Image 1: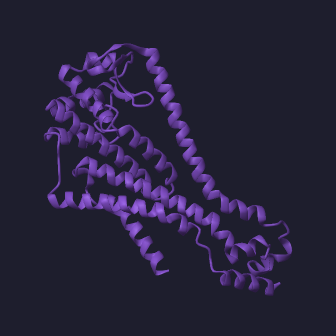
Image 2: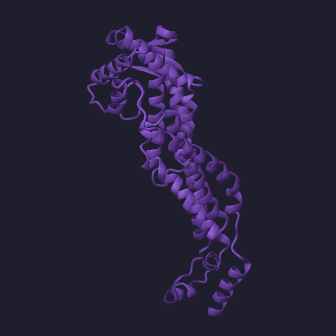
Image 3: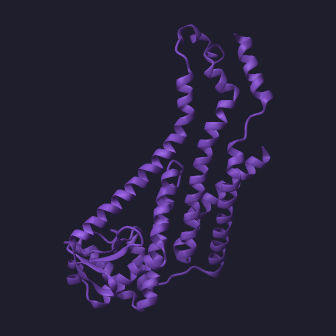
Length: 325
């Protein structure tokens, strides 16, 4: 029991620390690693709990007592009035957590595929010409600069964006999207969405998914600044995109899902903001710890989930139940 409690404490601490540390001012790759590992840990924890319920609970004396209609040991006054068998209800209660996780993951996966296919068809129908830096110009009334399509993805620029953004702003925004492709952000976001779907019922999962996306946006911003050496042009493009949509400063622009206000602050400060060395080292240590923990949980989870109660405990509970009969 001591080992189980210690493991649970370590897992709870690893899941809580990312929400405490100011990860928005550490290297975005480090922050993204931490948030992705946090989503993986949540998904593994949810799977482990579902497997535990599915495999462990039916072996307990309490479950067997209920399944064998040992109602007199649970609700003595209602024994004579409870006629239906408890088996279907008990079985459903055990299977439900696993079914919910599987359904959630399949639902999100199907949604991602449908959205990708719809976007790809939309681009094919509205593609007009080749744009800057190998992008594709599409017909759209909004200011759009984004990565879209199935597979590796391609950069699309709306004809409206070509008229609203100047040459430097257009180069910066397209390079930002190129950063998403070069840095392999799209697969991480897809996997993150699937992990979040599995661990959705655990506290902090939605926040972890948002922070992963925001960290990847910061990384793409830094990629663009490193290529163009013009953070003000990207900041201006973000503002123009938001203004064209009639939105406030916190509306995501250029495909960004994180707080635009902080992205603008970073860009206006030169495009790269960092905490102190101590914070950076702590964040890297936490990233390494969480990756190791993900591996340990993945390897040891089957043995934990398959752990069964002692036979003596089961027999004692059933004996007590039959004695009352």
